[in-house]
Length: 338
Image (cartoon, rainbow, N blue to C red; front, side):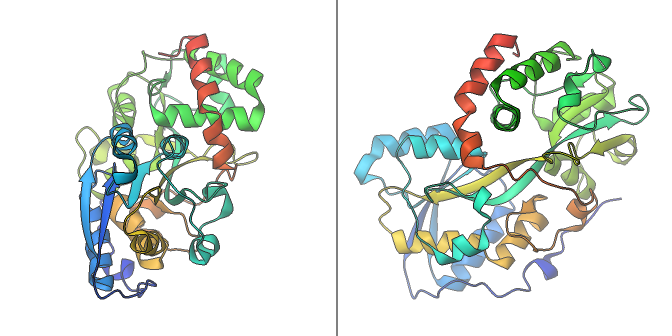
């Protein structure tokens, strides 16, 4: 069954942002989703602020902002994953934001400790499995390292930000020694060398290359809502999922977020844009338009996301997780996770 966009629901809430008569906002974004166009146009309609966009790879945008220095036109950086947000902070291209709206709307564990970045949408990184083969799928992240699953697991490479952040969270929750043992166990259980994106991990279940795969929820929810090659209705019916560690730390969450650029020429507009992203209407659109979970508690989900069910998220401090990424990369190299 395919689920349509609930646009009438997603934009029922009036935007809680100030109305400006004029102005512009220079947005550097590594979010490459056509559906975000509605986010930007609604902000412009509500405020009169024109958005000028530069899109690219997160690392390239961060490097560009560094090279531009004080002359950078960037007002806001939007990117995906905690590790990249932390990378931007460490590179000195963001600044602290003092906003009562953001403090009240965005949960503390989804904010940088120094208020330099904020999470605006989430994706749960969970376990998917072939229901015809894996009759006893892993129930926790730790279970992925169990020798019982040798030769069954598909996962992305160690250079991928999602992989790095998951291991960084394991370090925060269990310590480096146990996280190293876990990474070694998962590596030993690989069905194939790590390759491809999250959709490719799900396709691996369909092709029979693996019985168990790790992916962010929005890739699967997108396939519920619209046609995705290799993940047609019949294939989806044979894929089950587990929100891991529900009796312990909870499901690991990846962020999409942003911050105000260090030398923002339109700082007030930049803050207004971040506050807009925390509004009910924008939060609902992250779910309706891109199959993500809102960062703000209590905001309704789109049907494709709600179909995955309720779960307990891991509320580990993502600032601390981001700080563990270098240690995670060392562990990957140590255990041979390609």
